[in-house]
Length: 219
Image (tube, rainbow, N blue to C red; front, side, top):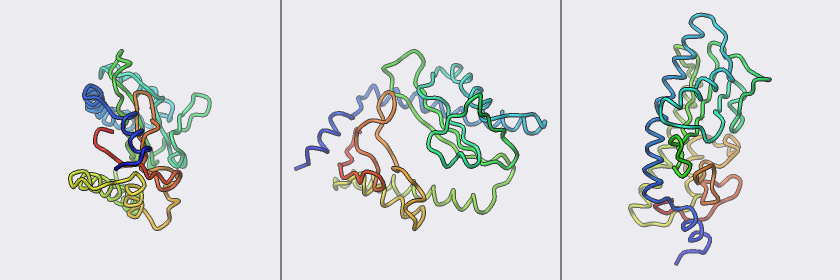
C-alpha cells in the first residue's frame, strides 16, 4: 500500500516518453553553453575589457537560438556574494562587473525552439574567473560532488531494489556530505519539474517541507 499523497504526486507529475525525449534533446544542446560562456569571459578579461553579469546573460541568451533552443526562464548569472542567492537574475540597471578570481554561478533553463509542449532542461555551472582554483573552493566543490553522487546512488539503489524512498531521505543523505550545519543549504536539495518550472510533485527536501512522499520511476 502507498499513501494517497505519493500516488497523487506520481500521477500528476509523471513524464511521458515524449517529454523525456524532449528533455534529453534540450539538455544535450544546453551543455554547449558552458564553453561559450567561458570563452566570452576569458576573451574579455584577457584584453582587460569590461564584462558584467548582465552582458554575459545576454550573450548566453543570444546563442541559444543557434542551438535550436529558447529560454523558459531568464538566465541566472550570479557573481561573488550573489551566488548565495537562489535564482539571481542580473538587470541592466544594477549590473555587476566580473573581475578576475570572481566566483560565478550560471544557470540556464531552455527547451526546443517553438515547441511549447516540449519539456525543458535546466543546467547550472559554478566557475572561477581564474586559471587556478583556491584550496577552499576546491574543497567545497568536492563536498558538493560527494553530496550529488550520494543522492544519485541512493535513488538508483532503492529503485533497483524496490525499496521505498522518500524525498526527505534523499535530502538527508546528501546534506550529511555537505556540512554538519543544515543551514549551509537553506533550501530543498531538489525539485520536481514540469514544462515551465517547478512542479508540485515530490521534492528532495528535509529542510523546508520535510517531504515524506515517495520517489517513484517516471517522476
